[in-house]
Amino acid sequence: MDFPAQLLPDWLLWLSALIYLPALALALYVLPRQRLGDNQFTHVYFAACVAMLLLWSIKAGIHPALNFHLLGVTVLTLMVGWAYAFIGVSLVALGTTLNGNAGLETLALNVLLMGLLPIMFTQLLLDLARRRLPHNFFIYVYINGFLAGGLSIVLAALSGTLLLWGLGLHDFGWLGHQYLAYFPLIFFSEALMSGMLMTMLVALRPAWVCSFDDRLYIDGK
Image 1 (spheres, rainbow, N blue to C red):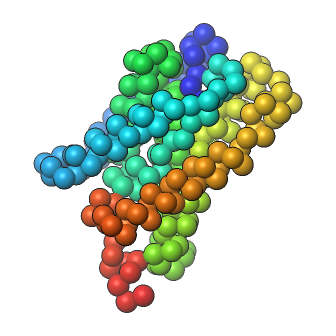
Image 2: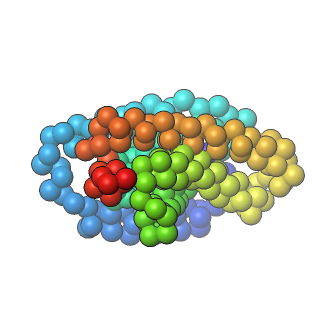
């Protein structure tokens, strides 16, 4: 869901910027900068950002602001942590903006809805799973990869839908028929992609996934 500026009131754009800028400053502040000195990390990180940029460029839409594309935010968050993921999503959103998909005025709002919400949900579910569930490889893949991926894209799409309805830009019945009806499809598409990618990564390249620890999820199991 990429919002064009002409659909939105100025107060919402300013409010989005006031939320986005402190969040970006916090991400930059807590960022483990020493990881940037690791060539393997930087290569994997920026390659993941490029892959996400391509993913966001492949979309199908039925109306301005109402389009579908996979996010990949859950995978990036599990790989590099929330701070690097938030900065990565910001770079990807800037790339899609420069490509003409939306205006710079809506960059903050798009990053908040398609980036910050999925990132925080993925991080929350990861923390809850670590505290409440057994430390198991399959639980990590299915809960933190499959389920978190599917629910995060539904959360982002639902938040955007409610925003359009709350601003009076679309009737809720029309949104339910034209957009909400596709939520099961986007859930399973994102969940399947996230689950498969995380399975391959933790099986073949666990060093690329900062949220996965062999000693916690595999050793002694």
